[in-house]
Amino acid sequence: MQIQPTPPPQPGFQRDKNMGGKNTKTLVILLVAVVAGAASIVGIILINGSASRCTVGVYGYAANMTFSGSDANKICSNFKTYGFPQSNGSTLMFYDDSNPQGTQLCAGKGQIYDMSAQPTVSAGGGIPTYPMLRTNFTVRDTGALMLIGNYLCSFLKPGSR
View 1: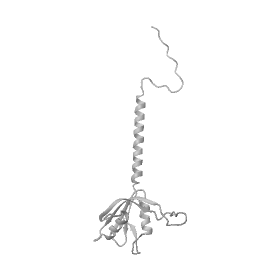
View 2: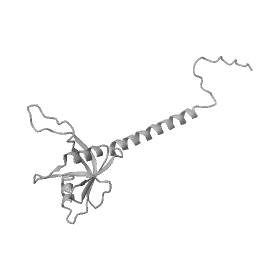
View 3: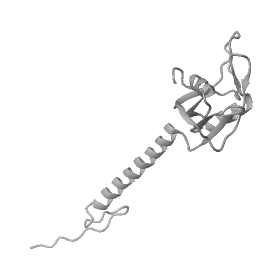
């Protein structure tokens, strides 16, 4: 029986024959799981918006609106700054409401014009258009007839009651 000499080590990476690649496979699986988990969390945040939340109440009425999502604070700011025009020419004005109360009249997802942004006007004039802000909303009212709350629901979610 002849004994074969062991070849000299080669420069560069040498895999340990005793490991059999098991640790490498485990590391790759773990890395894929961590990346997939992080991507899922980022996706949920992008779809649902961040944890931003605010509520505005209507001066002189018992109605309020809560908005949540990444654009919530901008939406509340727009309502407080510009109000909400009514068909009779008056404007509902809003204030910060840290304690929303009342019967929930409607809730859902919607889009609201960003009145604080620069409008886009098509070539040759036309009606200016404002960018849209996306939000989740809830409207509550404690009034006897809940007229203002229902009016706000019809604006935020056409066809709702």
